[in-house]
Length: 191
Image (cartoon, rainbow, N blue to C red; front, side, top):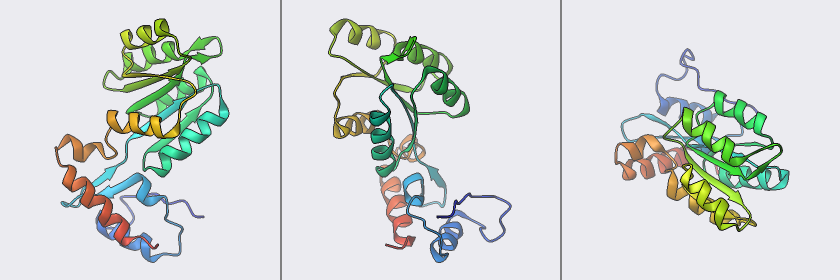
């Protein structure tokens, strides 16, 4: 599978529509294209919402990253506080999903650090069913607290409620354009 990047200096792609046509006509596997970008009715390229998942449980992280990516989000995963901090600095996630237990630190530390640098970032804290921890997480700025074990469907629903898939269209109060953009891109992609 080839990796694709949109480069403004690429003279084959004068606008996002041409970029999509060029990619769709190539022999490149483009199944991931519709997962991370769309084009609205004005030709504006929309990037999908980024979600960072951090938990000590590698299987949970992998499962959530895969499910969120298949749902269209740009999903990243980490298992340690240090890795998560580096990813927070390198990217701008709209949503942070953090487990309470992260080695010597915990998800609440990450929540505090992340929200201090990105006040607009939404956060979901995953932990045991403990009303005290839940209250503390919400008081520190978490948007939601989910008791483990969590289901993929429940996490997807919570992320969807907190952050639209294509935030630029949602900021413009243009859900119809976002839906049209997604269908437009999917129309150019091979089945």
